[in-house]
Image 1 (cartoon, rainbow, N blue to C red):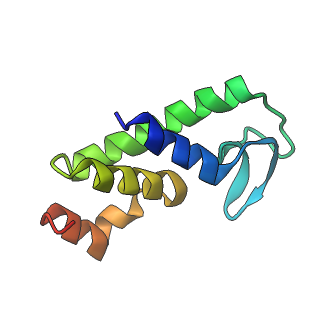
Image 2 (image 1 turned 180 degrees about the vertical axis):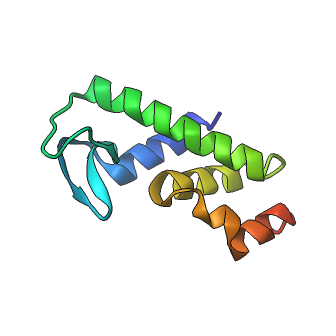
Length: 102
């Protein structure tokens, strides 16, 4: 589990948006999570629940690729995964991380 300051930094970077808006590949609301439909409006509690679910998935992916990475590296990779998806693990970055090149 990431330390609270890392989670807070991701939340702050994403910002809270109650109404879904187009965000690159999807409609997003809350703290950057996928909305159920365009224009969906959610409250902070729902946003936090969705954030915890999605950040948990991102963390699990990072743990599967880099279980021995230092906490700061895991935090950065979790943020990357949360924002851009898990594709980095199949790229040159993934190769470097698996080799322990932090």
